[in-house]
Length: 187
Image (cartoon, rainbow, N blue to C red; front, side, top):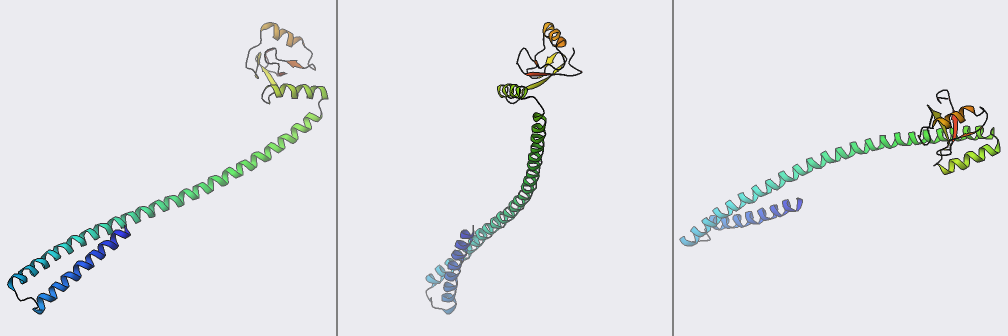
């Protein structure tokens, strides 16, 4: 749009120069023929109209430029606000990720301490089952249902589990995960 304004100003300057030249010729009496005087006057009127049209076009381009600049300022303000929001959100995300990493490290340490108290063969069995089931090797038995595979155990399996001593390792007959008895096991 700046190019359009420069072009319009150049066109106006050229037309005004020509009009001023013609007006000087008219004023100085350099043209003596009536026919040439009439033609020169018509050209001056035509140049005045052309100047008006060019000035209107220049004003229109200037208005469009101002509108575009206002829109750009609004967009820049929105961008600044979005950048600020992004910074706040990124900072919050980074803080959450740090908290999660800290919590995960704490949980890993706690798991390692608990695992160190278990017999080696039980730990090996747990790790084997865990590897077969996407990291979940133990599931609670809840209302006669293995919470690992979410299948309800049949009556015979429930009787067998109920008869098993409390210190013996239980396994789900469906998914083979280690089962943990709880007060809600339904035994």
